Image 1 (cartoon, rainbow, N blue to C red):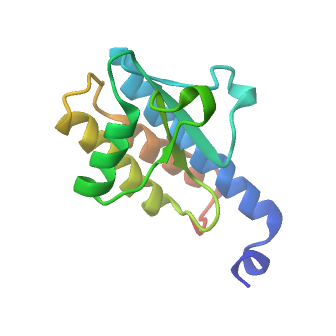
Image 2 (cartoon, helix red, strand yellow):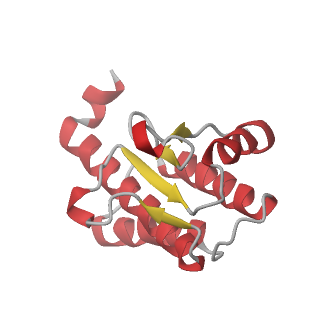
Length: 142
């Protein structure tokens, strides 16, 4: 029912904006060299989920465990060759901006908690991206 109320095009746009906000966060965190987007070509990035590779020596599965158990946010694991070397943040379905901000804050907090090198400000970059979209396009439900 919610999808029909929102409409498919609006739903797709929400997924696109939230994925871009996630990418902005990861790009900021990754400036310290320990994280990077798996899809390095922007046009090849998913609007449903973002895969983030971790640097050598950072156990992505342990990162996910701490994020789940200590920060109360579940992250997807790396698939195939990326098992233990990546984690995934979903931004599809009924995800909205505040829900995404909470997930990103949990990731940033876990980075800090585990002393993973990162550049602070990823959550702020995501908020600024969504806010700029809303200013340019008018009020949204996300």
